[in-house]
Length: 444
Image (tube, rainbow, N blue to C red; front, side):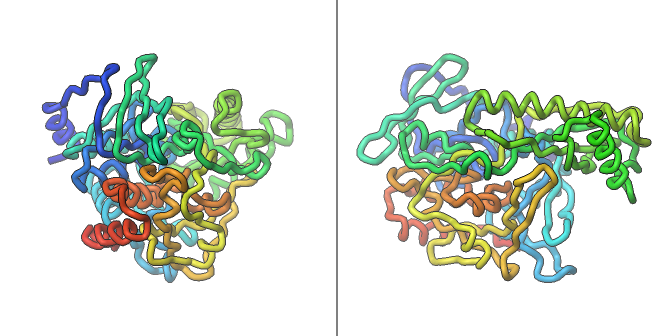
């Protein structure tokens, strides 16, 4: 059965969820439908928990769809040798989803880029793929266009959560919550401890657009150098804004289409502030359109180029981070530390985006994974709240590794399993999660 046939089958049995002022009950509430949230929802449902996944946009995938981030980073181990075959770093859902994405034509690769392997995918196809995966999963209900706007705390537990869709609100009483919002939304609403890096150190947000009708050879051979030279001249001659520096092009899965990625100016940026977000969205559109028009007028291969796809939102790499029972540090990653409570492997280098001219990568001393402890996926002061994805408990530099989509699949899976048994003390719960992971499809 192909993806369209599966979708038709799923549609045939759509359950109707009455959404009104009446309280809804669920075992596990997942906030955010990105890589971490989807993995958490699938993992919790597969443990038998009645699971509700809510997403503020009209589709799942998070950065991988809404922000057009077209590669799964952190999905694979760091290669032990230049000719070593790629190996998925975490068991269970990361292995399963990689296999299905490749088999169904949603992704291709993996592709080795220097010292790392990445899985390339098509964002639009990924959105449909995740629809199917979620819709056919038993014990999982999903609500799109839904946001968390409030919560009630009772004796160090989230007792009630208020959800909202376009002015209508209703209550949910979950047994456990997984915050996979990326922005630690629940920490802010619940008045819990969270951290944020000063604006001058924050990882720069990204803006990615699809550009169509680019000649097939425009990125071949010395094409990237010609593009860089053309942009540099444009900036020097004041025909392009300085923000165009560091613009990067990469082929998409569609014929004669490329992705243009731009790191935006982060000075004074706050990924949770409406004015700041408004500024970077407008800046992203202004600069990317200026780049495309400049290349169209000045570089062979771009004569018919046009912006074909805009992101739903700019790619925010860093905003709030929960403070959990444990905190993953830069030293943990560089030393490849792991302990008995580790429930997910982080393998992506520390990817620092401090300037507009691309990343600075810090690799561990050995090509080994860092184990993320369950304590970094559990709120410090709320017993039934777990965390996954880019807002997990980590330092600024450690988050520059753990935020990526491949690692988010692993932390989401671990948080979803843990949320199915929220009453347990963390050390015992970590052992339970590890036991469940050991029974899943092994990393390979």
